[in-house]
Length: 153
Image 1 (spheres, rainbow, N blue to C red):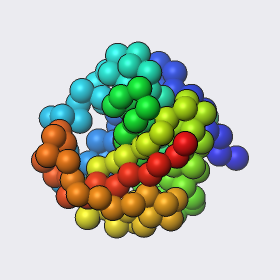
Image 2 (cartoon, rainbow, N blue to C red):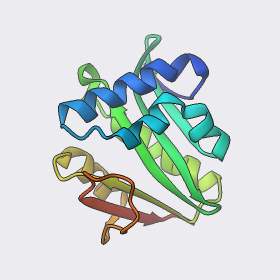
Image 3 (spheres, rainbow, N blue to C red):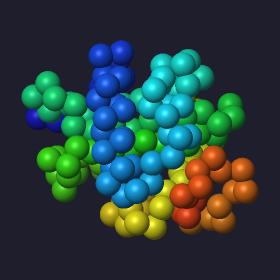
Image 4 (tube, rainbow, N blue to C red):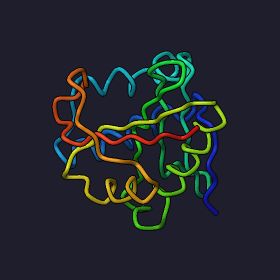
């Protein structure tokens, strides 16, 4: 049975590995990713954000982060599912739990940046009600060609 649990330090290697897998597979890896992948505790959790981990039989099979932008706005980021577990609804579970968590945190808006190559992920976000918007000029990712946001509170 798949469980969604909060990030702990023992998950750091899996958080990085799962994200590097998809970033490299789709040729979307950028040095900006390493800030979060190398030190999620300092750059996500200690800034007020959250990271969720999907666990099945004691194996980490997915992850998703909420990265604080302002006091009431955060980025949904680093959604990754192990290739072996794709197509089983793990990404949907992680996204849903992340949106619930953002709501409980009192956030007003969550946004994400993505790339058109990730059409399954984009359809998933659309199914939750994320709306396509123009990409902000200040995005830190050069490969971002999709920007979506959702008003939640």
